[in-house]
Amino acid sequence: MKITNLEAIILEVEVKNPASDALHTYDAGRTVVTRVYTDEGHVGYATTHIGRGKPTADVLKVLLEKELAPALIGEDPLFTRKIRHKLWNIADYHGAEGLAHWGISAIDIALWDIVGKSMNQPTAKVLGACRDRIPAYSMAGWYFDSEKAYLEKVIAVVEEGFKAIKLKVGRYSLENDIERIKAARRELGSEFTIMVDANQGFDEREAIRRGRAYQEYGIRWLEEPLIPQHKQNHARLVQALDIPIAIGENYYSKHQFYDAVQAGAASVLQPDNRRAGGPTEWLEIGAITDAAGLHIASHGGGPVNVNMLCAIPNAIYLESGSLKHENKMLVTQLKMVDGEVLLPDTPGMGTEVREDFIAAHRVD
Ligand SMILES: [Mg+2]
Image (cartoon, rainbow, N blue to C red; front, top):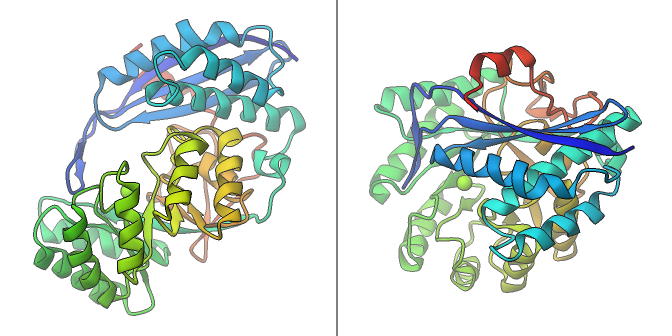
């Protein structure tokens, strides 16, 4: 089998109610669809969502089509590690991390989609699956315009059947954080698992002050309390607090994860499949963290993350949005049973995008 072409398509969906965390608002609503074609009819898909900065999608499309794609043409798509090495060599002059790694990751996901499709199996099984479902938590506790809107989201999470939820903290005072946690706990009951995410909102001293308060409420983990570059500072939080520290959504490649593990920066590492790398890199991040006795949770949901978490033994949680309504972008639909999301039986990564969705939302 040979790769014949790569196409990057930009889709845009209007964001009617932008969600906010401690520092950011996500309003761009763009997704780059990467399609890799082969001479045997298999087409590999990856979707890269751009939450902030619309022009980033344009840059990524140019990077994929003009810079990275020529290295793919004529290659066997099953040689995923050979291709990753070629792409690193192309990108390392301007930095194989950053946006270039978004491109490399998208290609790797599309290649592993082809691998699964060519073997007629979900990619998790081709990688060596260790489970067929993964516990999920809902990322529902954003900052909204009113407390009423916040509580409605929290209640919807229980009604949908999740057993865990993540709440944003750190935008306002510690007192406000505690009010949000208490209000959620009242609706969720004592058994429900709650994580909190500060999205880099604190410095070390403030993270210790707030972390001590959160841990009194049985919070499962404190996520990204500091900027991700401050690995040593995170390591001091791990020592100072009882609450587990989670970090990783902004790390690129196994090298940054290795550094974080070496520093003792967290108990839970959270690769993002756009940044960390595709399945090839995820497996190595999984192995590094497993050897260190640490856990993996995904940053983000969807079928790529489900496939990866079902192939990584030390994975504990899938992050997810609501699965209640039909996913209008993807052919593959995810299903949750007893708070766990099932590995879809779709051959490949489950990333195939519906043609009607592309037609309705394509901007480039
Ligand atoms: Mg986060």
